[in-house]
Image 1: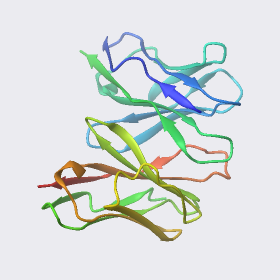
Image 2 (image 1 turned 90 degrees about the vertical axis):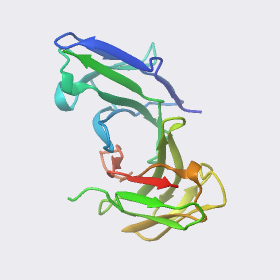
Image 3 (image 1 turned 180 degrees about the vertical axis):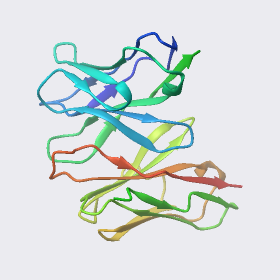
Image 4 (image 1 turned 30 degrees about the vertical axis):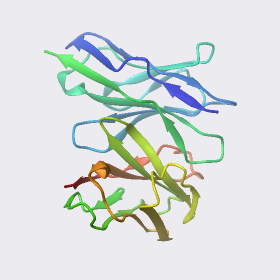
Length: 114
Length: 115
């Protein structure tokens, strides 16, 4: 069965430093992978996705994610963190090839300090 | 496009009352999902529909919860009777499985407080 793991409940980083939020997955077949961000009192917003092609995927707000098939990882990255990036981040994988259902990780809180 | 629309945005009710949450998916989307989010349990999938048909309701916590999708542009999630432990933020999301955009689009959520 498909699954997603986000091993860190919280990530702390100083403003201006690079950030990484980790995600590993388990799927049968080719993975469809996603990152979402949730700001306080808001719904989840789509950041980026990997379906096929380049392993480095670029998304909204300067975020990017690196797909690593051998390590079954899809880590979210940003070269220079902003205080406004502080939010809850979810990794997700699509369940199967012909469904809209996503399996979400438990979420990682990113705290960027000035 | 207006995105996924949910109403009400906030609902405060008393234990035992019936609560109905509403969702309008993005036009043309064939999947609709209802999620619940709490601090303790995180984000939980309650039920989802494909072409207005319920596909998987295994996440619905109890018989007090029911969901319907009478047409492609409207869905409801009903709790009857409501209990304090139902207090949470309920999200609706939709997606179109037939396009090159498999991501789900989420509504702003309904914050439910049951006193």
